[in-house]
Image 1: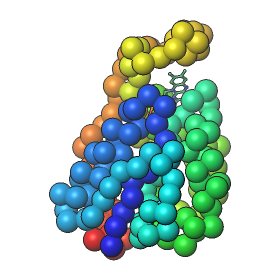
Image 2: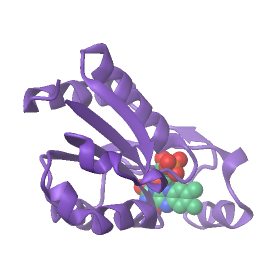
Image 3: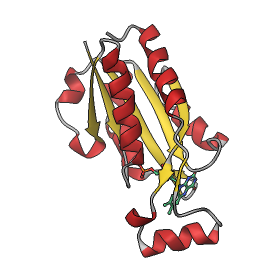
Image 4: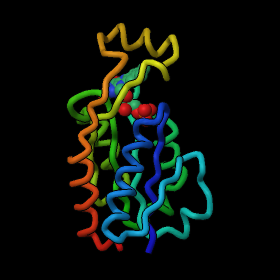
Length: 158
Ligand SMILES: Cc1cc2nc3c(=O)[nH]c(=O)nc-3n(C[C@H](O)[C@H](O)[C@H](O)COP(=O)(O)O)c2cc1C
């Protein structure tokens, strides 16, 4: 049985959360691997479980992650799907949580992410300035991410 942790990550922090989820699962004997949404391929048909992470940008779930969900809705509907969003805010906006829950899923989680000024474009820095958000921050709750990862094992991942 394999579990694919699929990440849509513009600047890498959601990918690092995905790596941590896969490492936590692997440490407990689950065959887990990480893929970027851009690496869509036949592995999606072969994997047994999918964990998918999408960041929030400008009050929206980031397009490439949602495109992956939409493009593969039928295939994903046939296997246990665990979704998480990551963002700078303390919680996920209810309408975004609702959007994620509209896809076939076993779990929807939210983890706070990270922002690294060195990776941001001029316009992204400007957007953060407008909403008075920091350009550098790491809010990731690694123990919380590990707890959630471990909780997935109860769904029969092995
Ligand atoms: C330009 C910009 C806009 C953002 N907009 C939001 C937002 O609307 N809501 C939110 O919770 N986080 C927002 N964030 C924070 C990102 O969701 C957070 O940094 C996330 O961890 C980024 O994931 P990534 O590194 O995988 O791309 C924004 C970050 C940037 C740089």
